[in-house]
Length: 167
Image 1 (cartoon, one colour):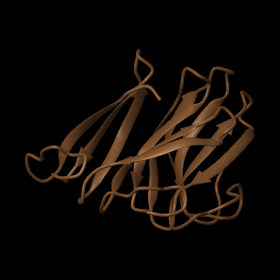
Image 2: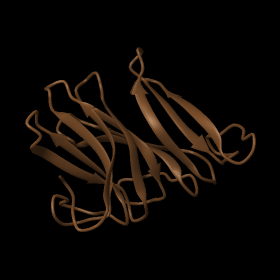
Image 3: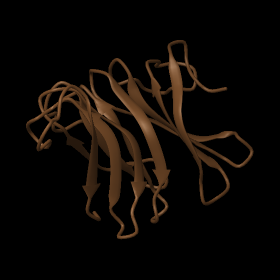
């Protein structure tokens, strides 16, 4: 069990190349196993050893709600995280509107390599991310926007697929 005194909910887990696990979750805590909170809810990433013990943990986000929904280990041994953000400060450089898809690339030891927001003026979020054969990423999510990075909306909440080229 990992967490703090405030809600910490696991959303995604994957076994890593070394036999351990990478966990993507949300946290509103700044105590217990959580060393830092940057705002309301943050992406909280945990790397577990093969025996289930905590190897490292990192929080990412800004002053608003940031929710991690999907994490995958990448071909270079790092990690890619997808979710949503309402922040426009801290680790989030460019918020497009209400809530954006927020992609975070981490090194193998959990350090931020890059981040990117995608969306429009309304509510947008990512549910899943996978690395593609060309080294890029494919993101599955939803969008209520019809501006910014979203070319068209068919009505209320549409599913939204985003393809990123290799970094």
